Length: 240
Image (cartoon, rainbow, N blue to C red; front, side, top):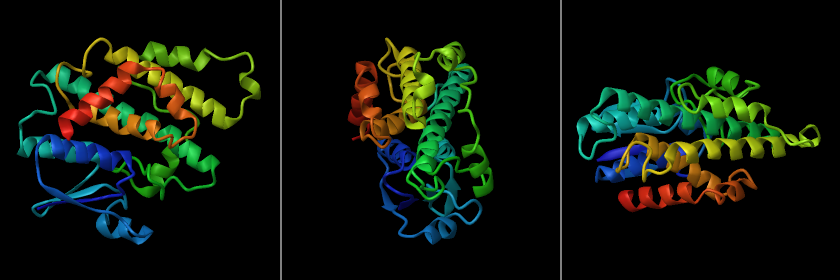
């Protein structure tokens, strides 16, 4: 039996769950009940999710799905074309890092440590490395992914932006990142073709958190993009 360790509310856990369902694999989820569970289940970094594949233990949601894809190749999470596969992985990692950066900044504003919240990020890093990344004044740049729109968003400001609260600025930035995703998706049903891939699983997990208003006010930005809502529905249909 495959054992998945992680908080069910985490988009990274959600991403792995959807991938396992797509592969039609049986698994059980064990959720942490205390901060000690994070370190006990992943002594190397203290980060979740973590998976046990018949004795093989792996962390990092993307690495987990890549290993699952090696064990169970069908349906594939990556294109057989190496160039397309590289793009899928690049987009998946950009989605993970970018949306995590905004949520972790939000948690810090709320007085909650991002390292103990449901949006625990960067599972391949140590806690100290994750903390340094969270403190970065800028979100990750989407290397190779809509770079022009990222640059434009950094200079495209409301006349009243200087009077905005940090929460309002973070929501505005989330809105721009959703714009980026919508442009990358249209007019395809999925980001890289006509079936679910690893980038779609990453995007769905983060969009699901936006839809649940994990950052209060974020849902209204998502509702402006029926294409992204459609992507979510298609991923959920394919993954049960």
